[in-house]
Length: 431
Image (tube, rainbow, N blue to C red; front, side):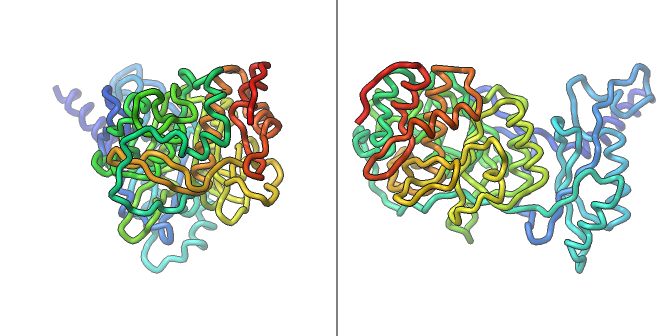
């Protein structure tokens, strides 16, 4: 009896260090064992700290290891990681806000607050020299790239495919005669999305809330709803619009959120790392990142893992046009800008992103603009291509999209029909 009690205590101690994973319920609704306290985080103050967290095998006899009492499949903070973090927090006076394991990197991460009055840059340099630390960096902020659509009570109740500039200009209807993106799995890292929207029901397979577990807020988030609609809005359902890849499968990872003080949505290193680490363990072929911000060592490591696994990562070009941050600076990422009469930066694709009609929370539709929307068009076309040729890698995908781009309204931009025809070796007429 005494040994059993000790075992339960040991499990509780280990569990105290582990941040419970956020997963999707069987019905596809967002669920969470514990909400991430993102509202308490401050990018001007907080630090992301990581220590080694090797996977330790279960103990062969009672009492040999804390992890010996943990159920098979559990991966939280191992005894070594827990001890290192305890030492570091005590030594530097750090206050832990939240912690979570990243199995793919073999580390356990925490977001910590430095003692009041501490120079964060100086502390980061000191932590970088500490042999117990695998990674120490500032908590970064990221933003989605869209212009806020005007608020309008009007709700469309008829099909408006002819008003979809991106759909029309990329000849998506012609492309869909050859491919509709059947079964291609796309991970959308963004805000939440309206799961009840008539054009998105059945298109979003699962959801993961890395922010707060607030289901109502998840369904009222506009940016993710807009991106999801461009990619995969249902076809032939007598509702609103048609997605570029209406038979693809979406997984939505909410890593960005809205605050009363900001018109747009923002994310941080913590929420984005949670999302990318979760995608590593899935079969998603395409990852849509209609967001961006500064370079980030932790996020760069996770992005490298995804790229090494052969994922097609599509990112939006920052408004300033600089390719120096996350995720646009990583080799292999397909970067997309809004179509323009001006030449695109080398290797950057152009796609429709101005006055794009797409889905809105509450079952409506509205126009929105930004490179976020341009990236969503390319993710949809990438799904069409993978449905035709599942073996396309990121480089081949980029080359097909670039080489098959056509002039529309005086602007060179991606063309869904030409790209699909090229991948399939077929010939279909485009305008």
